[in-house]
Amino acid sequence: MTIAAGAVIAAGQGTRLSGLGVPKPLVSVAGEPLIAHALGNLAAAGIESAVVIFNGEEEGCASYVRERFPGLVSRVIVKTTASSLESFREVLAAAPPGRLLVSTVDAYMTQPDFLAFVRSAERLPEDVTVVAVTPLVADEKPLWVTTGKDGRVARIGGDSGDSVTAGVYLLSERARALSPPENLPRLRDFLAWLCASGEPVAAVSIAKVVDVDRPEDLEMARALAGMALAAAGKGAA
Image (cartoon, rainbow, N blue to C red; front, side, top):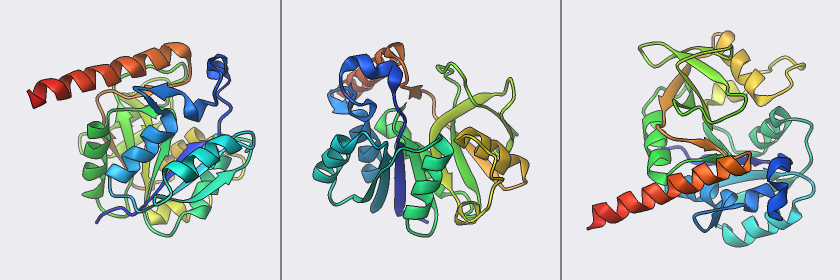
């Protein structure tokens, strides 16, 4: 079944990119801000309604999104949250019922790769939560995922695994309704808890995803965008 609702989490402070002079969601890759890449991916995937959360200092980002994506973004939350999990809960509460496609603003991948993930995730049973994973480990503190041969996730977290999370998730309606322990500090802790609690979780791999947190990550993202553009040009020729 087609997924109709989506969300982008963009409420982090982005302090390691602050030297660029713009808020992290507006940092540009291939001529487009990160938030435009994330929302453009959702739109291309057929998402009809999206929720976005920015931190309390980013009203300018909210204005940009309202002007650029008026038909897609149904609600913009401007709120400084205590953690990534609090931001996650905010968008879950604001989004319409059903499965929800969630992306973090700093998960940069090519649009064809994003769409391939979504199409694969859509084909899985509706009660399964799907986690995008990547073999490209370009994060200081990667969240490891251990996956069985059937694609089901056996463990999230730990010191090793066969891939790492890629910042995109398809939450089942059932998973959205669960009440995790109050003491979970971060989104990664919720994901680990979800898997450990026995909730069905599957992994779909994306070859290259860059978590854009640092200037060197930004250079990797721009290189990935350049390779994608070059490949598309060769294909057109």
